[in-house]
Amino acid sequence: MFQRKLKAGYFALEWLNIYATAYYGNYIFFLMRVEHGFSNRENLAMAALGASVYAVASWLAGKFAQRRGYFVALRIGFSSMAVILAAGLLANTPLAHYAVILCWNIAMCFTWPVLEALVSEGEDRKGLAAMIGIYNVVWASGAAVAYFSGGALLETLGHKSLFWLPAALHAAQLAIALGLQSMAEHGASTVLRSDGAVPGAGGTAYPSTPIDPHDIHVPLERKKAFLRLAWIANPFAYIAMNTVIPLIPDVAARLHLTTTLAGFVCSVWMFARLIAFFCLWRWPGWHYRFGWLVGAFVAMIGCFAALLLVENLAVVVIAQFIFGLAVGLIYYSSLFYAMDVGETKGEHGGAHEALIGVGLFAGPAIGTAALYAFPAIPRAGILTVGVVLSVGLLIVLRTGRGSGQPLARKSLS
Image (cartoon, rainbow, N blue to C red):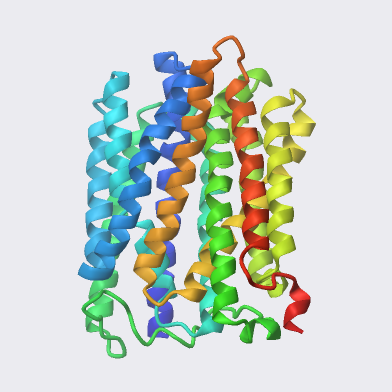
């Protein structure tokens, strides 16, 4: 029961974190378009800037948390994000907003790797699968709700709410984290290790994840082969996602949507990702299946193009739904395989987030470069990113064939 309370607290921190970060991180592009006249090119450039530091800082923050303690990292992250966004209330130039988003991304790196590690520590294989499943459902639900409600909040509360609302949530997270640390350190059945891990967290009281009997006998080298494949695929998924998000204001303008309606309509893919996470959590048949990973990659490429290039609301909604299912499977693969293979959860969480950062940077950076190189072609950025995603698919296929591991499911029977 004690461990259940602790992990429930970690999931509460996770939900608040994704809501706060998604509200600011997604809707800042609407603010920059309206108040500072940013085009697709400038919004993509801003997204690339923030992600450029996230890739490096996540890896370093994961190592820091493993070495100095998880709660130390959380205190740094939550307090810094609150202060930075509070300072953002004073930002009134593009340069000031660039500084805020840059510093905020660095601070955020002290949260996600740690939350991933805290929910994973001390679990046996079945418990780990359950924790990763719940973790994914929690953050995906927060992201979807944040985008769905964000447009209405922005129009009702004003653009300053992009700063004070997330800052208040981060301050609340800091208070919760301090309480959880006290519980972990003084609880009768838990002793916090020097590396910040929480031992004895196995035997989770949460709904268990069904384990495919085949998975029990998966050789370590085969696990590592799938981890490599997922870690290749996941940055490309984030290339797609972080190209879509800065361009949503443009999609909304083309479809004649208000900010509120854009939040409703353009959150479809996030709810689809949530559905994917829930299904993948409850059904283990996708574990270590190469065809599922490749199929998701192909669907992601096609729907990325349809979502950003087709000017028909019905097509955009359908493309979003399939896109969300596809990126959900790719992301879930990366995190599940990372935690299934690794023992140092903090470092593996940091590596997982660092690879996300690579994709977060590469998509907007490629799109920005293409728009600068071909200013007469408004959709040059979208087309170029589409080509890069296709190259990523070829890399995954080639890596799968050259891994030396039997990737077909029948090899386990």
